[in-house]
Structure formats: C-alpha cells, structure tokens
Amino acid sequence: MIRLTRLNRAPLVLNSDLIEHVENTPDTVICMTTGQKFVVLETPDAVIEKILDFRRSIGCAWRTFPAESK
Image (tube, rainbow, N blue to C red; front, side, top):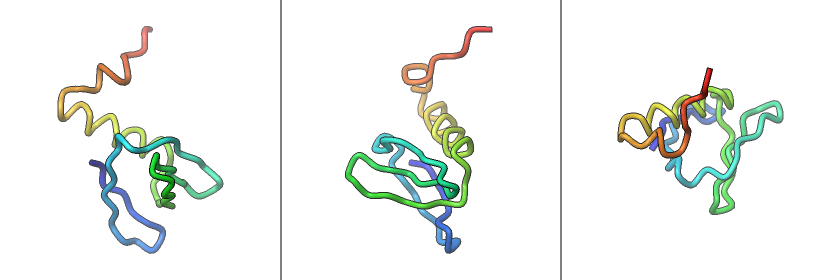
C-alpha cells in the first residue's frame, strides 16, 4: 500500500499491486486494473519511488524491479 495525495489534498492509500499504469497529462493520473482512475499531486517518478520503497519494505522489490546494471 502506498500513501498519495489527491488534488484536493485528501489523503489516498492505494494497493500498488493493482496499478496498471501512471500517466502524466499534465496531472498525474493513476489507472488501476479495476478501471478506477485517481488524480494525485505526486509526480509519476514519486509514485514509482513510493512503490519501490513499499516493495523494499516487504522484501520483494528485487522480484519486480531488478537493479539496473551499470
């Protein structure tokens, strides 16, 4: 679960496993696999970072997002 902020500053907690894609149009729109859409204040990069932080916290980030080779 990740904590985000709606445009009206209301807090929003999303199940990040249900995110289908994130658009930047110019607001950040999160499209869920359920068909719901949420517009949030955070940038797409911030949403991705929150997802990674959450997955790291439960020990599964490496399964979904392998480390970049340098």
